[in-house]
Length: 204
Length: 204
Image (cartoon, rainbow over all chains, first blue to last red; front, side, top):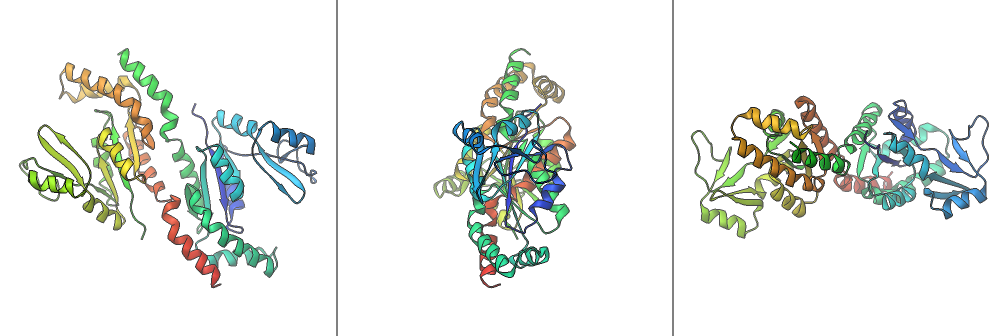
């Protein structure tokens, strides 16, 4: 069995990443990465499923021992992606999905160049604004902030491998699936096959 | 309209590249590159369709003026891929297919790093030998030579981007098509879109 891919999915705030992720993990060839965090569990959250809930000192050990693929501090809490979990899943042939923001994403790509980097964009800025407004969870000022943030992030989209336009949801999900499937055709995954092929010719 | 991709397809002798190419060009989003050659036209061959038939001096001018993507000498004749034809087709949104051997292929990739490099392999060395025998066009000695050549080429498969196993023909053709389609999602093709996106936010 071939190793699964590490797939980073990012996108502008409001682009519909969450919905795409939920659709993807319906399919059990994909495994959403489980993050470690120092924040307290919310009601109904399960340790090892929603998060690995850890103490600050344990989290610091994870950092010191280089056991995280990436980590960040957010509103006083630490969040990070444990290497072991991700690599175990990949060894089992699962494609592991990381939904992270740009800074963390570029850090992952730097450390693991084989990572498949996908950025989700809206069909237009107007469409993005409308989606943010429809969500109804942000004030006008917050929406404005998110659009300014999107403008900044637009410059780093080229650091990703692929761009998927989320115009039609089903199509976008299919495009992401196809991109992940195609990552299994990368020549680096065929090194052993080529060794065996050469041996086989020797013995024909 | 987005630019088409330049796609190099190579594979071991006898792997079924020709059949795959013939299936691909049924679909007119793909355009087979037309080579320039100094050899004489054979009966029924059409200038500008099968080949661009040129004189040796004209071919040398093409080389001198850097108008070829790659070129090679083979049994006393020159063969080369004219840049202009390929780039015109790509500008028109066509994916241009080049079926060339490894040395030329790696030369193309070096000059044009955006080239999508696909290598076709058989399911096994045994299967390759059987196909070469079934073809019936080579002697046992020639088949042996081709297998030895395949063994050498196996080391350079990693220089390609993708590997497609030609086990089931229809599946292999579909895989190649999917790889080409996915090349249109590369972030480098979205530079202008991101510029427009930023401007659009500015004017919202």
